[in-house]
Image 1: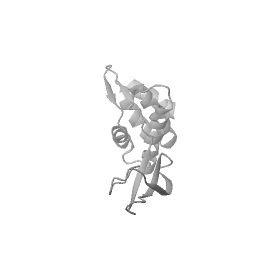
Image 2 (image 1 turned 60 degrees about the vertical axis):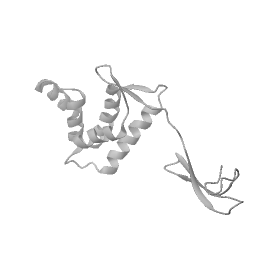
Image 3 (image 1 turned 120 degrees about the vertical axis):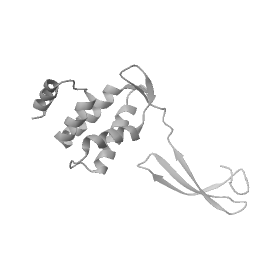
Image 4 (image 1 turned 45 degrees about the vertical axis):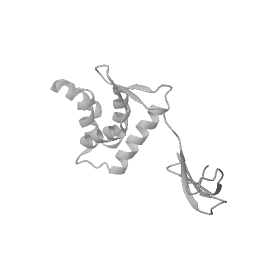
Length: 148
């Protein structure tokens, strides 16, 4: 790698460390010509995930948007911020394990709903009411009976 200070074409790696849950490598480098040190990072570059919405539109997957939806469903429950981050991370990981870069929003909802159901029934019902688009009280009642 080229030195960022003197533009020398060759630098030495003096330390390598795995960071970010094993998805990146941090390298400390030193230039043999000028002696200065600098840090570089090597990360996996993922293909973007496209979410197929109910109306057929496609939009880029957003972990922040997913987290926002989960936060709304989990408000005033026992679910912690760390658990929400884990749900988002597990959901994205599950999607990336599939052989495609496109996923239906319904599939994402099912993945999240399964995780919420294990953690907190109230959060699950709140999430399901939006995700499954309950149009009347009967549908809501059926889902509630499944949980109970």
